[in-house]
Amino acid sequence: MTGNRTHRAPITIATVAALTALTALTGCSDDDDTPSSVASKAASIASQATEVFASATAEAGKKFDDVKNGVDVKDDVTLGTPRTGSDGRTTVEVTVKNTADAQKSFLVQVNFKDGGGDLADAVAVTVSDVPAGGSKKATARSNRDLSGTVKTEVARAVRY
Image (cartoon, rainbow, N blue to C red; front, side, top):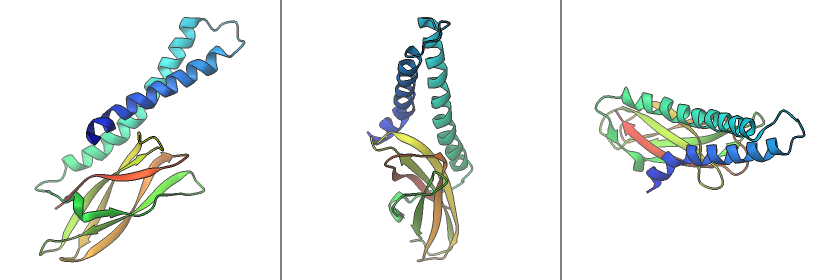
């Protein structure tokens, strides 16, 4: 079920953005704002929000498409506590454990979620040359500013 929620999150966020924009725009005193122009502006804002979230997820997905013969190792990845820096970007430490008997690399998709659990951003992190039986750390950094409570999750991970 979590996967379905992730796909609906951009729509939910876009709807909230559209309603917020609609509320803000209807409060304006500009005489040129008709109900249809306000609705059009709100739809435009919602469309832009959806495109941003879809773009982040698609970009992470493209990297996974390039991995050949990857093994699902989501359970071999742990995340630290997310931290938002002064630049507004959120980072989280990613630790991978290589349970294979040879050196491997990992590709990990980290989803950043807002306090309500909706997708706010997604990034793919490569952790290269992890020794057999060893662990290695990397940092996932959001593509954009995130505010409020930010939670992270490993959406998927492959070892190759």
